[in-house]
Image (cartoon, rainbow, N blue to C red; front, side, top):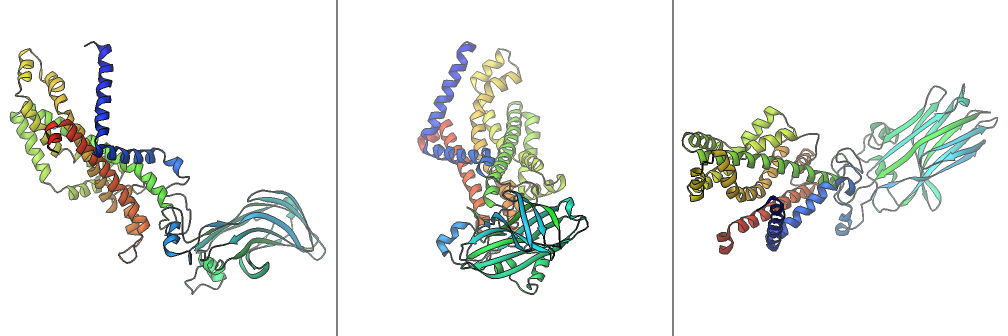
Length: 475
């Protein structure tokens, strides 16, 4: 057959093989599952706007928001944010606004002979029946040159309105601004200073639970008290208050407020990479060792097989733990260790097949025609054992993924990356127990590992049936 016709013929054979694979119910289900996880791994940045360990999206250890459909909405809340800047003069001052944006504003304030007060506000309507779990504020004021030699008292507070009437006010920060300072506020409701200011230093109640405890309208306000006869310019930036509820998204949050769905998506990519690369290394080594031992035989076979037997009797997990501890906990080291410790069983399978093939008449004919060892191995023996390679590839990936998960769960994984095993480790470190299990954190990576493993196992069984007609007829 000429070279020009061999390529189309190979494509036809691949097409026939692929369609035969799809006709098998097991392989169809396995390929469908695997395609879903590959899509998730590749399209991760498009599926979520957050980063696994960088974006704090809500309060700590929040269950998924759909939990309200099973427990009822009472006691639960979701995130909210103050919007809509409004600047006004309260007493004795004239306010001129030059620009207002989403979280910023620039204005000039002039006071009378007795001084004056101006106020900048943002608003939110708290509609949830449960209290907030946490809030985070930010604010930055840069005074203009007109403040030179003068001081302004800045106060930040929260107002609650019921029926249009102010029901309560909480002063959360104040500071005197002069020409040498920039007023900045970065407050978290869990901070000790805010708890002391609100009289909650000896209480277990978070300031967010106290303030956002009922359905009402709220205002996040900045009040500036001007000195007499002042004319001062101000630039206001990053004027935000984010309320973090007690539920979040599809899969909740971890102990730092990171999105667990994002971790699951990005973990799929790294877990698949670890499983596939470690399996390629292990299968490649097993194939080489099996071919050499089976075809050359004698002393080479004896040495290689005794070394293989020695590696097989060493407990796998303890050896993995020791090697990863010595080399260091990184994904690269885990891939190499899993790969270099995953070839022994496959090497023995390949050797047994090669021992049978080397006695066949076509091998004897190749020797008689003057073919060398390398030529016979690559052109005659390797094509006859390649089906074992495909099957072993499919069946070994789950073992590599579970191996990485086990190492990560024991604290030997890469601490800077998020895999499914690393997610399980973080859930364990967070203090979850049998009576206080963060199920929304533990179950998703466990299901991910199980489903990916199942997909490869189904494909492996199907390949085994496809390459072994006797096995196919028996089943």
